[in-house]
Length: 118
Image 1 (cartoon, rainbow, N blue to C red):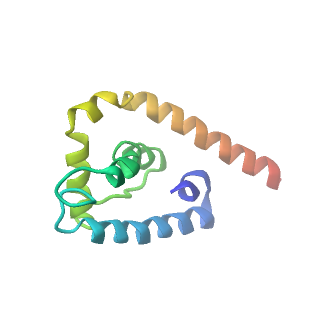
Image 2 (cartoon, rainbow, N blue to C red):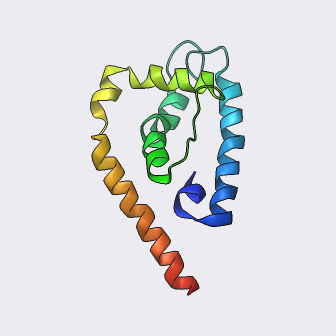
């Protein structure tokens, strides 16, 4: 995810391809399950729960669709389940602040890369 977010051009395309491969694995792992460990939420769900919050932010900044409900139905459903848990939903920062923060982080990485290559 990081390579797609902090790179441009061919390197970003490679990062997006890597994301697609990893999402296939995650989709397969979630197929037929409510959560990564089965019927109950567990540590793996919390470890990957950041995806639910940040992937849509990254999608907005990059102008890409990373998690598509048609290609990733189990992952999309898992995301909804995670985001519907009140304590999780109430803990997330406002989306507009996340977009601002992560856009600035991306801009910084891109500017640094341009300066070092130029």
